[in-house]
Length: 357
Image (cartoon, rainbow, N blue to C red; front, side, top):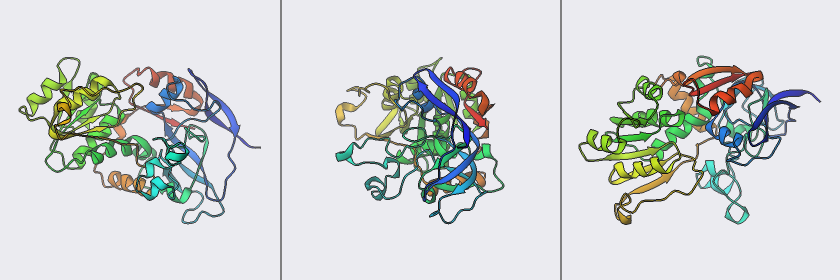
């Protein structure tokens, strides 16, 4: 049986490069040869044992590649075609999909539903930090990549661009809104860019790392707040003349940033939560106006599927946003363990790492 190289979860603290069989292709599947992929913060949660996956799993959920082989029932695509697939790969026919929540694809509440249902690659099935990945339900998930776009231009589409934009969309950002985005890591930067595209006229990026604030400025974010030198709540209220923001986007997953988001909202504002939380979140009574402030709290799991990917690719092809500055480091798949060491420890100003077999 033909083998391929793959980054495999062994145990907490160990993701290693190993060899695995190249997957067999089912009727509705597509085998994609990976040309570029990347490491996500969620992969680091897996590495640290904070998010459980099965030992032996190939990790990674952000594939850019070329169709190597199509299942017998797959139509509308051809071998040799450049494609991406979303981190979330819905089937299209579950209860959640039929209700319009493709990200939550999976069993219903009677059969163990939980909010990672649609996240399969690198979670419940082998992912894409490998030479090949098997994409399930190919006709629902593969999006062609135009010749005019490079791998690195579309690399953010499968996860962080979709997630970040989703945070702005779920927050209901409107023309003329003021938006604060807490944490300017990859997700927060995409959320800020998405808020600008949605019509916000003042987008405020908050972080403690000067390099990330500089990247936010380079992406066209209107104002930045260095949380290491000023109280971000006070500064945002100053910038808004005490009014507060229409939408606050939490992109870190911590109690401190969640609470700060509540404290900068105007009456009737919306907290759009993108963070992945590893402990219970408390809602302070005063910041929540004792439940009487007409506030909304919404959550988002990365929207997936081929139509979502098509729309994001259109944004890039039209030149509405350029996320290439977020790729700060490049590694070969052979050096994936070194790439994890860099990314997990956030050294050398890393934002995103491009991995190429």
